[in-house]
Image (cartoon, rainbow, N blue to C red):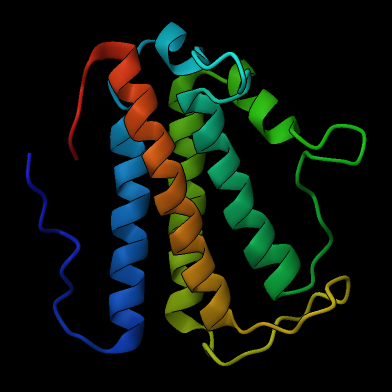
Length: 167
C-alpha cells in the first residue's frame, strides 16, 4: 500500500515537522495493528530478547513522554526506567494488553504533537540534568528520527510475525 499522508497542506517548517512526526507515529501503530497478543509480545531475535512490537511501541511512548516532560520542560522523570532496570519501559510493553499499548501510545503521540504545535521551536530545554543545551526544534527532530528508526525495527518484526510488509 502506497501512502501519501506524509505530505503537508502547507510547507512551513512547523507544519512539515509535525506532519512527518504524525506520519511516523501512525506508521508505528500500523505496524502493530492486527497482531495477536502473542505476536505482539514475541521477540524473535535471540540477541534482543526485549525487541517485540509491543515493547518497542511502549518504549516510543515513554521516549516521547520523557523528552517533552523531563527534557523540554524540566519536570521530574516519572518514566518506568531506573538505573537498576534501564529497560523497564520495554518490559512494561510485555505486560500490558496490546490494545492498551496502542491506546497509551496514541494518547502520548497526540500530546506530543499538541506541545510542538504551540511551543517556540527555538526554546532551549529546561532540564537541568543535561549538559548540552538543545532547542525544542532539535527535540522534535530527534523524536522523528527515533520513531523512524524504530519503525525499521517494527518493519522487520512485523514481517517475521505474519509476513506483512508495507505501510
